[in-house]
Amino acid sequence: MDESIRMTIDQQNVQAAAGSTILQAARQAGIEIPTICYHDHCTANGLCRICVVEVEGVRTLQPACVVQARDGMIIHTRSERVIRSRRTILEMLASSVDLSESPEILTMLTQYHSDAFRFPDAEARHPAVIDDNPMYIRDYAKCILCWRCVQVCAEDAQFTYAINFSGRGFETQISTFYEIPMPESTCVFCGQCVGVCPTGALKPKREWLLEMGYSPDEIMSLTRSQRQRRKRREENSPNPS
Ligand code: SF4
Ligand code: FES
Image (cartoon, rainbow, N blue to C red; front, side):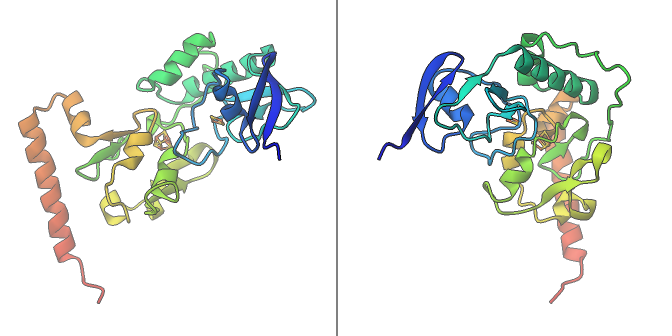
């Protein structure tokens, strides 16, 4: 039984294993499609839509990271419509999120000739940095809601379920359940969320303090006293048994 499929991507004949996504088929053929929310080790959710491509005969643009390639598809990854769509997505991101520590997205803004100030009336959220544990800080002004941290905290890696979306619409944000401090959540401080965050919204505490001008000795004493406070809190909390 033939388990491969054939398609055309950007006028190039491409063969891929049945079940491949358009993104996988393209990458295998050396055709690069940009991604933001997609991560090789996370379940693809099709959230950011930067990977959209045009498929002949299909009315809407298709997110390549989640749509399966089919035999006979004719795909365009850099048509005018695709480029315009990606440019607009980048411009909307730039108008509402602090991308100063998102080097890959900043590179895309240049590549797609995006105007970061196209939507001057767009409202950006400026939540305060959350510094509630000795391991990492959360700066959600830089969060693009890519969902990667939530996924690695859940079924993609750690099965800890410490974080999820909270709020709706403009107020949507990654948070702990009931917005409790991270040390009171199920978080085990494995660091996987920090590792997959593409924007600097999650950052090791040490790196953050170094950037603010603290010396290594000052950082040691700051994080140690935070650990001691946490230990005391745990010792003083009522035993449920
Ligand atoms: S905190 Fe980082 S990984 Fe999590 S959703 Fe925001 S940008 Fe993505
Ligand atoms: S990379 Fe495909 S939707 Fe984000």
